[in-house]
Image (cartoon, rainbow, N blue to C red):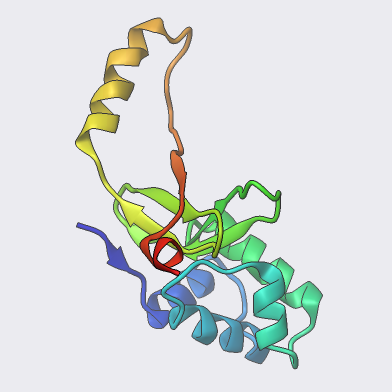
Length: 140
């Protein structure tokens, strides 16, 4: 089971890492805490027009480095982000609307274990994203 991090969790983690929670960072974190879908840095910047773009980008990088958000590569090269969930997971990303959903699948984990003998080295992580057309886009 995965659980979404709360705004309080996000703020506490940043503070625990030794960073100050400035008003712009708090505004950004509050906005992200209400996001149920993926987002781009540019979308966040537009929604928080009173926060400088550099602050948005730097804060997203901070959240990414802290493991609080996930960065997903999109076919159009524009990265999308999503709040991290507690627990191991993978993503589906809609090619049309950019909606990001999470899933877990034990088959993938078994596949990785089976591939380990063929890997020249130690497997230390992986990232899997499926690019889809979501149900909403298909219905439109």
